[in-house]
Image 1 (cartoon, rainbow, N blue to C red):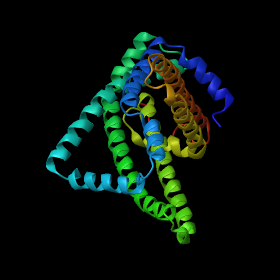
Image 2: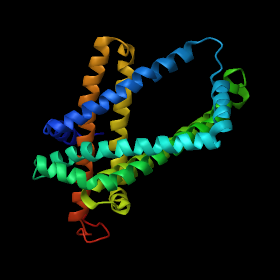
Image 3: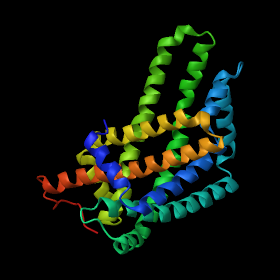
Image 4: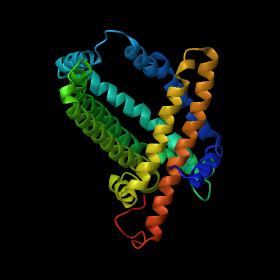
Length: 290
């Protein structure tokens, strides 16, 4: 689904610029710290094996606690400061990290000075795009958890003996999963194309959106396969998370994959952009050069 040609080109591109690998290593290290502190796959495995644990009630209880405190002035202040800080750090990081991928993927293969200038020029636009991305991601995460509650409740009822509503459970679980997945795909494609478009068209979200819409389904499948492979890798490596050698292996693998994934994303974007410019629109439609 990724495409052999796309993947091969992404592998070659990922190792073309040393600073691209350096930023991937930094991101992999940050991700490793979070994964070590919150080993989600081990937690899920432990909860599923814990006899007598009522996952449904636990999730609902946690949601009640969150909703009880979510609208307090103190919580909103902390949330606003946290999102602003994350957007600032993330925006600065992405300006230079994605700038490295932009330099590596451009046909003329930009030199270090052009890389620096394009990265610095992208900072204001990237800060805005990152802030919106963080805001949307947080809203989506909260909405997805809340939307899962009915499915969790019905599934729990079936598991404790309510087989009379088994068909309803299957339907509700299916609708919930598909709805969340579709929302994730739309957010993933549009935000990804906006972030990449910063280096081609400046601050215009509309430019990234228009490009995404010209090849939405093929782009969605490519990016979704990229994410699915990453999640599968993390699940496979979770047993060695916590061991010194295991942490080093995970960091090395994630560094290589993040560099590959970044290059792959730019290559997919470039393919869509080239098809648009060379197509019947001729590049004269509402896509603006920065």
